[in-house]
Amino acid sequence: MSATASLSTSSLRGATAHLADKLRAGHVYRREDLARLSNSVDRHLRELISLGKLQKLAQGLYHAPKPSNFGPLPPADDQVVKGFLRDKEFLVFSPSSYNAVGLGTTQLYNRTLVYNHKRHGVFRLGNRQFDFRVKPRFPKKLSREFLYVDLLNNLDELAEDRDVVLSQARSKLPSFDMARLQEAVESYGNMATRKRFREWIDG
Image 1 (cartoon, rainbow, N blue to C red):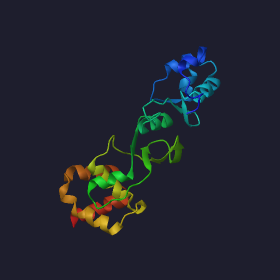
Image 2 (tube, rainbow, N blue to C red):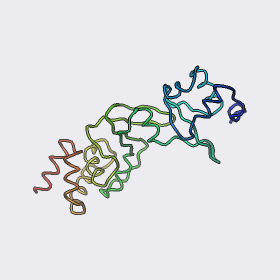
Image 3 (cartoon, one colour):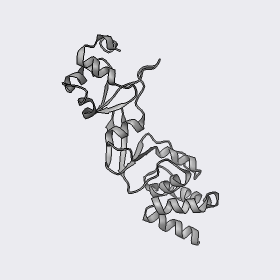
Image 4 (cartoon, rainbow, N blue to C red):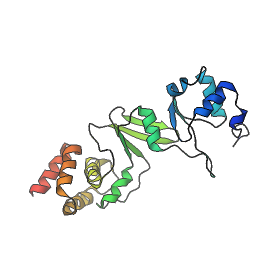
């Protein structure tokens, strides 16, 4: 850490110190949020970034880092996504979560999916890449049934043996609450997943 970055808030003056006092460690802010608290927001942002009080995640998006014994903590994914989208309706998860369903998937994926209603594409926010995908519907939190359905939706994207996963998916059907699984298929399954599920049930 540089000598400049190690300076404390006490070295700030006037309006910059006032803005620094309003920051909550661990929170993500948009420029317009901070502009309400500053009469010269861009100059104050530059000063706070140089002092390590803020980190720039993307254009117009900033993080007030929370200190720890090992250095500043990275922002939580949900804080970053909420600030980027200006929205609370999203679901953040890794494809590695599919491994918990027990369908023979074992790969670990170094990417983060964000299902949402607004943005589509891969965006770098801070030191992380987020794969934003617009979806008409998604749950508020992960469930075994949703992961089962979403895995089948995205099977062609995964580094798994497709036939093995499909065989496991069919054989694991009795381990699910069928009403909850059917509801997940109807709510979140794409056309191919819904068709395959009906064939397995009818077969």
